[in-house]
Length: 296
Image (cartoon, rainbow, N blue to C red; front, top):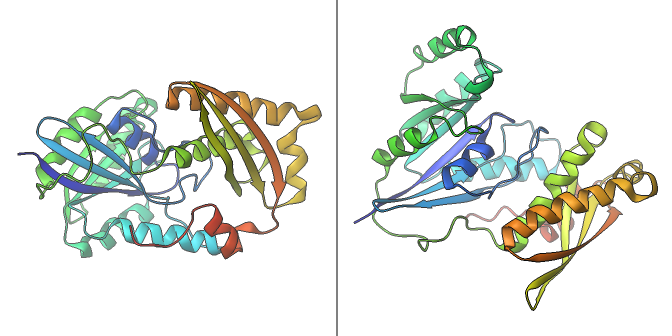
């Protein structure tokens, strides 16, 4: 009989939670970019093997809310740590451990579930710098274990995943054996387009980008996808379009390549760009894009 359970991944923005989740399930289910707050809601990653089914809950990075979308993201974090078997606090070892991480660990002790810490990005951190940072965790009460990993290079990830199995408390199978996420293909496609927009535009636009899938149809062995990139300021539109459409074309090329890997099929992708002023404070727009504070 397999052991089953839920493990919440929490931590600061850019700590490496989404990269670690993708490494856990050996497939891309959560998008990654250098911009803070790239992850906006709970995303489940599912790993099933011969003796367990582990359901990892990725969450937005800790933040101070400045709009309705921020409120949604904070609620998403609160929801994620309810009724889980273990809380995995992800800390960027390269940036170091500060008071915010310590405060969050102390806060989650109130959940009365095991707390494990994963210190990430050890592939770019010198041991001489890392060791004093790890020593800070020795003085923190409530931590069950600490692991050092590089999710990008997949170092230490298998050992951490195996160790987390001891905290699983259930026996009910929640997903089929070949499931890797609770999200629909439509959602993952929209997130891939948002990821490529953030990556291609780099620092030229803030993270206030949304993506709406207008059409996603399979015709024979190919997919026809029509999507709109939504911006919150008119000044962002010429940046995303680029000179003679070069930027949006580049976004489309990179997005199509990733979507074809996801769907294992040829993809015809059409992208549009629209401005919806202050959309992150518009409940109707948030609902259209799937950001609703329903309990999952």
